[in-house]
Length: 196
Image 1 (spheres, one colour):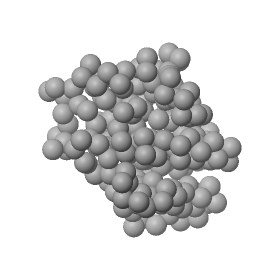
Image 2 (spheres, one colour):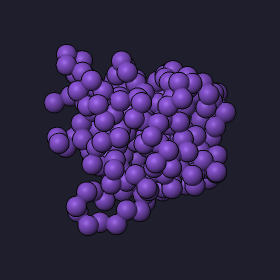
Image 3 (cartoon, one colour):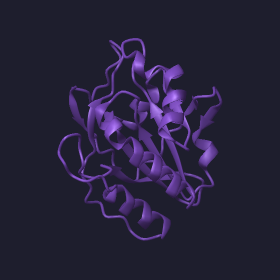
Image 4 (cartoon, one colour):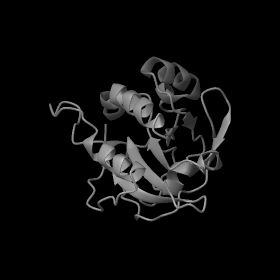
């Protein structure tokens, strides 16, 4: 497993548009969340050890913050042909087993991952509604400093701090630590310019 860091997309960037199917085949788009106070986009997958490490914490986080008005989507952009554990038909079972209450979407063309400059799983992008119906990036970084086998407790403190500040209309520090995880599994010949 190749370890990769988030590209740290520029703060203030507008959330790129997307329309992707969820695990039930229903199309979900950025426009579905334009009235939310904020939107968390998580690039994730089924098989990555870094995502599996946070699996229960992500489910708990989703339940807690969706109840507070944060919109959340998970997006799987991995090449399912070469990584069948990440195939769409397995995503529904994973979402149910993990207890994810947020939509889990499949980015078959990998174009959404490229638009967000997503690099790893998990990769977190938190956007704040600017009251014009647009979402500006206010946080991109790690969930916390826990990693598989590093024996650091999973707290979600980094992401929680940013979300709590967003929901309270407080400033969010620009001092942010990149997320780390497995690289997104790009289809052969589809690797973006920032990969590698």
